[in-house]
Length: 221
Image (cartoon, rainbow, N blue to C red):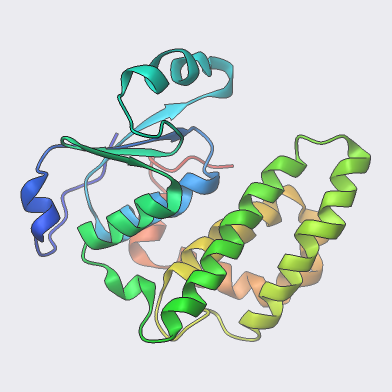
């Protein structure tokens, strides 16, 4: 499954690697989702290999050894004869590939964008790991590791519907984390709804994101 061809300018990376771009990750959105959003925003064609927990041997028993990745891990990206792993590394590659450098912010804002990006990427992982814990441990992780970060994001976002004047990686990663938090901890989310709902809605109304969410490519939580 992939998306329609990009009509953007072809850069040096595209010239060197004309073969299909493959993104490999678990079937759940989670930390692979920002990568999909980057590709969807650019309307860049890609296919996915989605591994399920019930068939984890497809990754651990087969592809992890056979794909010849330098550092086997999920997510991975294979683009022609080029391959890399680690989600942030892949995101940086995709930004250059799709000519969407504006997503990184400008000037000193680049570092503020990355600050939010890395906090939210870790937050997504924390929310997922909490769902695997027993009830008491889950509650403790929620109160000590998840809610404090959510409160900090609320403070930084304030009354805005995006973290910066233009769409950036901060919005992409924050949307991924906050939508997951809303789904996983709907009761706890309500105290933040008045600030975060407009932010979530604005991102969801971006035409290419809206089309993606309505397509079969989008794996709902």
